[in-house]
Structures are given as structure tokens and as C-alpha cells.
Length: 392
Image (cartoon, rainbow, N blue to C red; front, side, top):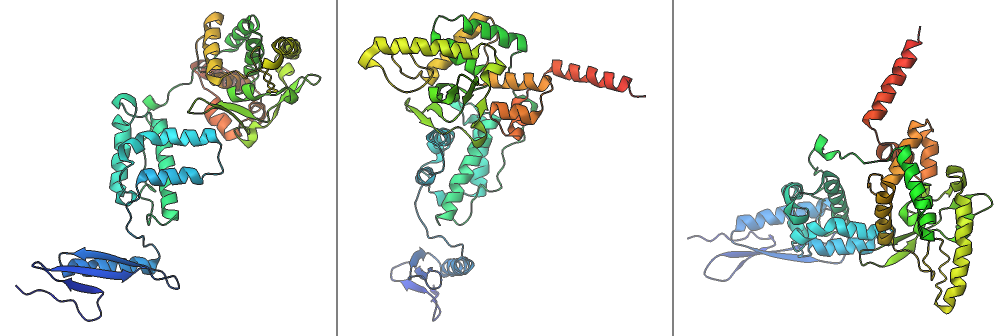
């Protein structure tokens, strides 16, 4: 059998042995950069020539990446470590979103992923990528894919891959079954809950949930300091938040967003809030004297009898208990803000004003927090009929 020989000048040589094998060696460094060679062995000279042509083309176009066994997990870790611009809470959120993907695909070399692989990954998320072998919710799929795109964009930016294979990948179209209605309270239920909280025997519960009913997020209630409270003006200023990380530790950080930093007129929203705060501050001063050296001087408003800040998970447990006491539907704690947004909207408050009060961007306020209901639709229909009936 005739064995093909490389042509003069080709970066290919025939290796000795019983079977023909060809080794190609190329310099892949861009012009002006130090020399960097890559080597690959092939069974046929045509395969070696194809590789040489393809590699030279990619080098000339500036999209060549040297072969590497760096895994998706390693790239994800490097990307998270590079995110100096985010809060630890956000970092934990990214880790949680990526966890199912990395459990299944994390040990694969990142260069091995193709567009087809990413489409199959999205199908897997939809059918069995969640807990107990069930599919992820549509919203979770959107977040997971968006986060994965950021990871792969990072891989492309540092030269591990040439292009992001997830760039144009989409999750399936959202259906009616994916549009879960957020449960909210009526104004009457908001008042019943407020009355139940006001009667609670634990002082911090009375104060904390009055602030919740003023639209503060859980992190904002638990991060509020006495220095942020103006008892004369009846306002509180949101300048930080206190959250719980994945490992169970609590951290204090900047507000969630620029819009979150605001001053809330709590007395104007719920008369008697200033009196509650004054009474609680006096009780706290007595607790401080009784605790002596055991007192923890955190400066926070919502603390226990020795000055420790209340844990976020404990605050949520108290909320569910208060729902039962008030005989109102048990909704998500965060849905209290949805309830307030919907109430303000129904009362005719301008969206920009309501968004400012609750610490939202106006687009988020209208798209996420203003919850539509059948009753609201009926009211709108009746109002339209009234307007049209007078149009002559």
C-alpha cells in the first residue's frame, strides 16, 4: 500500500511505525506575540491537512482557542470569583441556580459543548432538572439559562472557548400553566393582619410587622437601625439590608438596588407607627440595662431581649403564625408588597409614586408587583361603562 507523504513546507510529518500516522505542528500565536505551538496526531494525511487549514483560518480570524480540559465547573467557579460587582446574597443566588446544571454537566470540558448540547440541556431542565427528578419551573429555567450564558460569555472572554454556544438558545415558550398567580391580600385582610400583629405579646413582632405593612422588604426591616429612624418626622430611611446566606450566616449589605434606598413615611401610611417605635425603644433600653454585659450593641431596631438581630428565617416563621392568628390567607411574606402595590394601584395612585414608595423601578412595579384579579377586571369594566355612558 502506498503511503502518502507530506509535501515540502507542510507542517506535517510522517511518524515511524507499522501504521501510517501524521503529526501536525502549528504556531498559533497572533502576530507579535510569543511563539505558541500546538500539536495533534492523525491517522490520515487528509485529516491532518484539514486540521491545519481550519486552525490557520481560525488563527487569522482571531477566534482560535487552544485545546484545554478546563471543565464547566471550573469556569463557573472562576466567573463567580470574578464578580466583584455583586452582593454575597446575589452570588449565592447564582450558585443556587447553577447547582443542578453543574451536578449533571459540571465535569465536562467546557470546549465540548455545542449548540445542540445546550438545546438538550434546556430540554433536560424542563423535564427533570429540578428536585426529585421533576422539571424546573419556567421562571427557574429562564434564570438558569441566563446565568449559564454569563458563565460561557466569561469563558469566551478569557479565551477558553471561541464563541458562546448558548448565545441563541431559548427555553420553551411560556404557557398559561406557567403563569402562577401571586396570592395577595385585600385591604380588609391587610387591616386584620395589622390588628393581629399589634396585639402580639412579643414587642419586636409588633414593630417588625408594622414596618412590613409599610412596604419594607424583610431584609430592610431586619437591617433597619435606630439611626435610620426619624421619630419626629415619622419616617424611616432604607440604607442597608440584612439577609441570610446559604450557609446560614447573616450579613448586612447595601440595599437591593438604587431604587431600594428611600425614605418611607411610615406614620403617614399607618397612624400609630411612631408611637409603637417610641414604646419599643423604651422597652429596648430597659432590656439593655437588664442584660448588662450580655447586651449585643448592634444598633438595629428589630432585636431580641439581648440585642441580637432577628434571623430572617425566624421572621418568616412568625409571619406564617400571624397569618393564622389573623385568619387571613397564608401568602408569601414578600407578597405583602404585592398586596400593597395592588391596593395602591386600585386606589388610583400614580405608578411612579407607588414604585418610589415601595422601592421599585417603575417597570418592575407594573410588570411584577401590580397583580390583576377577576374583581379588578370587573371593576375596570364597570368604570369603562360609566365613562362611555356619559360620552355624548
